[in-house]
Structure formats: C-alpha cells, structure tokens
Image 1 (tube, one colour):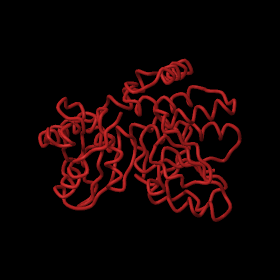
Image 2: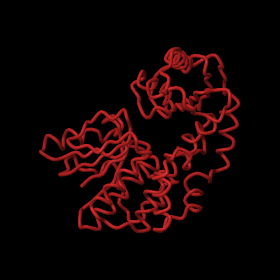
Image 3: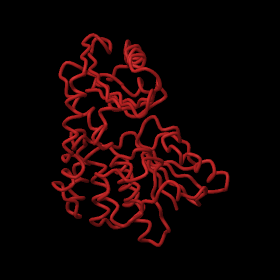
Image 4: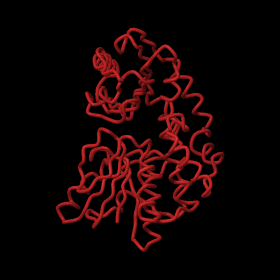
Length: 312
C-alpha cells in the first residue's frame, strides 16, 4: 500500500500520511509513504517518521492495490508520482483521496474530502476513530503536527479542533517540543534571507479592489543556506501587514519559474485568484505556479485582484 503526500510536503500532508500509514502497518499492512520532491524529508518534519515509513519517490511501485493521496487537491500536486494514479486505476486498483481543499478535483476512485475541516489531519483522525483504532503518542504527534501548522497555531481552529488538540496532548504530543521543532527553530541564514526579502516588500494600498496588497519575492540568491521550510514561512510574516488584506510571496524555484503563496485576512477569496494561475487552495490561503519574468507575474496578479471575489 502506498500513501502519497504532495510535493514539498508540509506538516499536514506528511503528518497525515504517516499517521494513517503507521496505523495501517500496526494492523499488518505493507505500507510505504512518499512524495514527488524533494529527495529527502524536510528537516523540520524528520522527527515524525520514527518508524521509517518514508521511501524515495524512485522506490514507489508503478501500481498499488490501494493508493492513498493525502492533502493533495489535484494529480499535478503529486509531481513525478502523479502517473501512479492512472496506472493504479487502469490495473484495477483503488485510489483514495483524503483532503480538505475546496479546490480538490476528485481524481481518485474514492474520496474523503471536507473543505470545512481545518486540516487533512482532522479527517485522518476521524477515519481512525471510525475504525476504532487506538491513538498512541507516535500517531498523536503526526496528527498534532498537521493541526498546529494548518490552523496557524490554532488561531483558526474550531472548539472541536481545540478539543482534539487536548486529546492529542493527553496521548503524548508535547506542544512545546513540537512547536519548537516545527515553527520556532531556524538557521542564522534565515535571518539574513528574511532581511533581504522584507527589504524589497511593496505595499499597494489601492490594489485588491482597494483592500490593499503587500508582496515580495524570494530570489534564488536568497536561498543560500536556507531550508525550504524557511522559504515557506515568509508569507506568514508578510501577511501581518496591517494595511493590506492580501499578502503575496513569489518564490523563485529555478530561473524563470516561480511559486506563489497567497494569504488573506478575511475579506478576499485568494483561492479564486490562485485558480486564475492554475493553482488552488483555501479561500484565505492558496498557492500557484507561474513561469516568466517577476514583473509580468505581478502584473497578472494585480489584474486578478482588480475585482476580487469577496467573502461574506
């Protein structure tokens, strides 16, 4: 059985895959967990794989009897492993998609998709509970990792999710240790990168239909000595700008290729913006990929936000 997280997995994607994988292995299943890129588990997430379930993408068989894709809204988000979906279906196997993104394309044969869940980890624990499988410390840490990160340290969590967090702590997840490992530890190079990136930040108060846009870019030269996790965390600093409803961080992954992270405070649907670039996500947090010159991408972004989709 193969469980796949999306490329450049975050704590929700990998934590969800590992939690479900660990529960299945303990019931005798032959389980592997993988993702299309990078070649290794992100450093901040390595402590979750205490039982060595993760294998390189090259070790994932072309066909599985059951393929499970977690926290992955579309096949393209599986990167080089996307072809395993069609191959498994064509061979008569099943593809189960477990996800909480409203933009999910329902590309599997079976789906557990709920956009109201704060994290895919919430759906995984619901499945485990439905099956009557017990929760232990290793499972709790994996699920807690998804919760604490996808809820912005529980700032966007419902009462039920807070209660779930308490249950996970009681089962053995240590909030202090996990927060430090996942969120609060950076190499010194992160500070240098952040100084450069924030120095080039631009505030456009009239953009996004007058709601305000703040944006910056992370260039290849900024990435020396910096982990992927550090780059992904930049948008959470930029989005604190009081004068802007929408925050955007464009990250150069190779010459002429960029990924964009979008965040909104609560008034603008940034998922609708990301979808204009072929991306997706949530209403208040979304992402996309784009090729070309930075200024051309920013021009398209401004145009996509000219008459934004407003929430509630």
